[in-house]
Length: 417
Image (cartoon, rainbow, N blue to C red):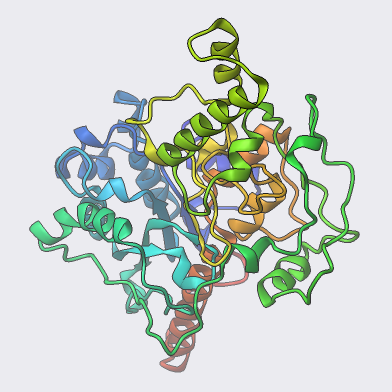
C-alpha cells in the first residue's frame, strides 16, 4: 500500500477508473504507531492522502483510508488485534468510524471470538465493516454458530480491550452474538486434527523440512464434520492427503512434553523438567552440585525464567479449542504442544493450519518457519468466509431493493472485488 498509488494499482490490474474499479476493499493495517493517532490526524487523510509519509513507521491505517477515499468501494472490511481499541489511551477504531463517516460510509465494528463461528481456536479480533451511505443498509455481523463459555482469562482480556468503548460511549461498537446452549459446542482440538497421522517427536532429525510428501489420513475413526470440511473445501481439496504434516526438531524437550499435564503452562512444564532431571540423575548415579549434574540439568530443563511469559508453553487439551495461534509460532511452537504424551512434540504445520481453519489443499509459501508465520498472521478462513457471506448478502439485498425501486443498481459486472 505504500509502494503504489491507488491509480497505479488500478492501471496495473487493468481495472479502469479508480473510483469504479473495486466493490469491496479488505485489509488489516498494522498498528505500531497508534499511540500518536487522533481525530484530527485521521481526518487529515481526506485532504492529504499522502500524510502517511510523515510517519511511515506505523500509520498504514491512514494509507488504508486513502485507498478507501480513492477507490470508493461499496463495502469494506478491516481486521485488527484487540489492542487497537485501547492503544495509547484511546479507541482507534472508533475514530476510524468517524473518519469513514466523513468519507461517506456507515461503519460499525465488533470484537469477535472465532470460536463462536466454528473455528477450533479461541481468538479475539476486531472487525470493522462499512458500506456507502447511498446503499441505505445496516451494518450487520454474523450470528454465532457454536457456543462456549470462555475461560476467565478471556473475559478479563476482553474487558481491558473494551474499556474505552465503554468510557467513550462506543457509538460504532456492535455487541457480538454469542449464541446460547441450543447451539453445538465448540470445535475441539481433537475434532480438528485427530485424523492426522501421529508423529513421534523422537523420530525427527535435524534438517530442512520439505512439503513434497503427502501423508495418509489417520483412519482410526470416522472423520468429524470439521475434518471433512477441511479435506473437501471446494477448490482446495488435498488429493492424496496433506503435504506439510511436519514438525520441528526439539531434542531437549521430548520427556517434558510427554509428562506435562494437558492444559499445563510453562511454570508447570519447568517444574516437570526439574523433576525429570532429578530422577534421571538419581537413576544414573549422578550426584547434585557436580559438573555432570549441571550438564544433565541443562540438557533437560528449559532456561527460561518461570516468572516471565507463563503461557510461553501450553499443552493442548483435546476436548477444548486451542488458544490463539500467533505469528510467533514462526519462531517456536511451544505455545501449542500436542496433547498426546506418546508423540511428545509440538504441533505440525498442517495441524496449525487446521486449527486456523485452512483447508488441507491450501499451500504455504517458503519453508516450515515461514509457513508457521503465515498461519499465525492470517485471519482464519472460516471466519473470513462468515464475514464475506454477510457482506455479500447485504449488498445483494441492497441491489434488489434499489432495482425494485427503479434506482440504478449499486454495482455492475464491470467492477472488481
